[in-house]
Amino acid sequence: MEVKELKVNKTLPYDASLLRVNFSLSQINEIAASISQRSTVSGTNEVAWALKALMLTDLTTLAGDDTAANVRRLVVRACLPFEPQLFDKFFEPTLLPDIHCAAVCVYPARVADAYKTLQQYGKLDDISIAAVATGFPTGQYDLQTRLQEINHAILAGATEIDIVINRPLALGGDWVGVYNEVVLMRNACGTRAHLKTILAVGELGSMENVYKASMVCMLAGADFIKTSTGKEAVNATLPVGLVMIFAIQEFRRRTGQIVGLKPAGGVRTVRDAIAWMTLVKETLGMHWLQSELFRFGASGLLDDIEKVVRNGVAKLEKA
Image (cartoon, rainbow, N blue to C red; front, side):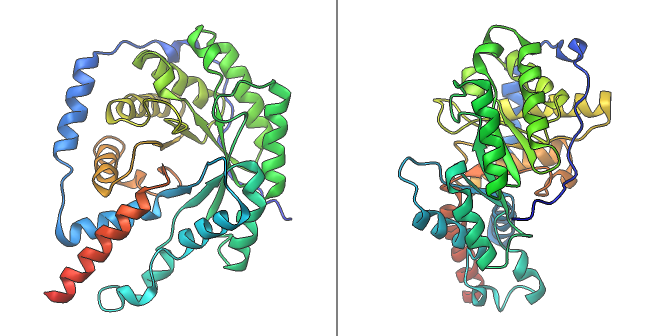
């Protein structure tokens, strides 16, 4: 299997000055609530935002009973979420090939199944294969085992690796230790795969730790920082997203390096997705709403996208 060379972020020297931070939690919650209130859309605008969310989604299955068959169904749905004739009256035909998910996200053992189906549908260049790795979701495994898992997933066809950081190191304040591990994971990916670092924000204890974990991962060479595994009690929330965006902005200002954002866990409806896209648009800018810089990690979001789009098209037909 051919492994292509990708453009990836560089590892930068550890810099403790980037970890100095002090937040007003009430102010963060207030800003997030204000943005959420401004994120309501309807009619054709809702259909357009729903399709945008679709094209930013890593369609995910991370269940213990995943098989080759249900991974194939997932991939087919990512490739062809709607029948093309649904849009015949309202869309330029040239836009239809772009209406698909950004990636599929699976366990390393299921990467080969995803690769085979994408190959059959001619979508290997359009839809990425993301694999969770490094002892997902806990990360409580020997370091060498975690690094080997990255290599296994890439050799099977993964072009993106979603790793989990070592939360015990983070909770103990050993940020150098977190940095060193993520550097090794960046090196294991090399230019063969983009690296997304999962912070597991619901287990970090404070917004300050979320900010510090974001900075450490970006210094280590992450291409994306990701909120959650989806397995924690608390996953992606707008206030957490705002803190991670503050880190992305400051990191770019200090280093010139651009890092993407991936909320995962808890983004289930188009309304949820629009709130996140509004947050990104108003802080990082509209240009950030592309799959190279922003993703949703979701398993159920596509169900609501399909409902919103079909209802919207039906209303257009009646009108």
